[in-house]
Length: 193
Image (cartoon, rainbow, N blue to C red):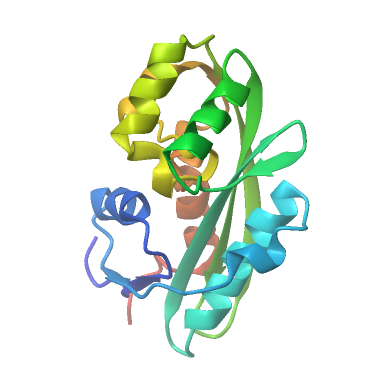
């Protein structure tokens, strides 16, 4: 496809940028900096949706296509954000070990005339029972420190997961198929005249 407009990604996530680059979409990254703690009181799915919406609103300008997303991990209704350090990362992994949790990724799309679509996609992830040394090994790797829930399924964290119900890319941070469909519905792929 040629002649597609540039899609502005309102995110500093290298994983989201990588996924969009795989689709060969023209991309410009303009991170939105928000106080994510301010919405910490919300239920996990609502928090993911609102964070994505606020990021998109912070970056959108008339005439631009903007995509923002945010991922929230929840165990029994409690949100697990990005761990503050290795010890908190260990605590998260101990809690997730042998259990199933929800991963909510919200995304917001703005079209050039202000058309808006906001959606939340849920996936369920089951961790296998982890040995203490595995928890220590993973936490010490540092990989989970910048990720909701304290793990990254696309990296070393792949060994922690027993099963996923739902879309893998939702867990990775961007429900790619849903985003693609919504871009089409909003007119992104229409031929440029």
